[in-house]
Image 1 (spheres, helix red, strand yellow):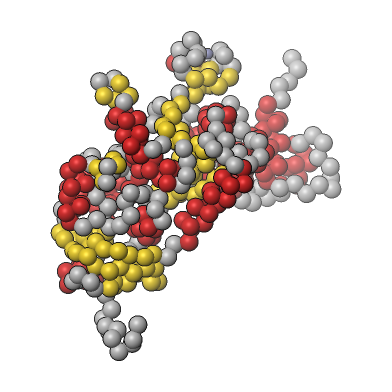
Image 2 (cartoon, rainbow, N blue to C red):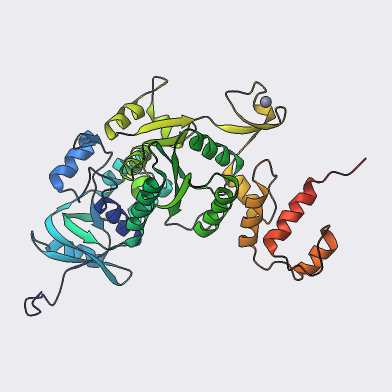
Length: 399
Ligand SMILES: [Zn+2]
């Protein structure tokens, strides 16, 4: 641009990484048919009909960043104005204004979450980020992570020649035996499984890199080669709403998957029971063009002495151990090894070693004194120490 024409007070909008990630998802075509910020007319229609271009879409796609600076800018923008998008003090994109319009933040939150109750974590987060003026128009953003994901999945599909491509969204917080069972079942019925590993913008639960490493430990050592690809999935506010399943289905479909696997106890599913008939989500997903596959809840039965689906075991609730992620995570965060019926020992060892680095003053000495067959010359790391310890826990005495 000719510098003399450049407006000294170049318009800038300040957005957070969550907004940037969402803009990038849409721009990359992953939420297609939504491919741009909606104008006022489109936004009103989508909020009313829950449809966009013949495909179910639960709420308008808007950019309405909060803050005094942003408000002042948005108030004065005119059609055709160029705006720099700034995130973490860096220019990350550009937008050409189509229109600006006022929105009601409470109504907006209601459209996304089905409630405006601020006790809902999503509501609280969105209200803290949402301004009163939205801007629409064509935009570009720079966000390499998403292009990398698309490329990696495409390369894997080409390399394996996969036709049936299954997918699931997983927090793996932490990865437990029931997750493993569902993953195996999905692999069994498809050529390739894409695991979208949730990467939230909050710091709740285990760190992403710890969850990723634990999942890799399982995939690399206990599953056939070239059957699984793990892709980071940034859990932005659009996926936190009560219509999350539709967004998940759109995302998986646009990444090239033919099937989305969900647990029958998925929180978002209850919404779709229509007179006890699990119908509408499947009807809606037909329009999206992806098959939805539900999987039973798995429990450990102390009488069957294995992992069973609640549908195939006759022993009843009081024999069942549930895979309750929060409780398993609490054990680990307290430094305890979860029972191996809940979490595979390799995964526990990996996570504990990451959570409590260098917790023992003299690890080598602990090794020599506790573990059978530890050669004096071997240097042992903490992960190996936990592995051997768990093995010891499982060793029963002769009585
Ligand atoms: Zn049983």
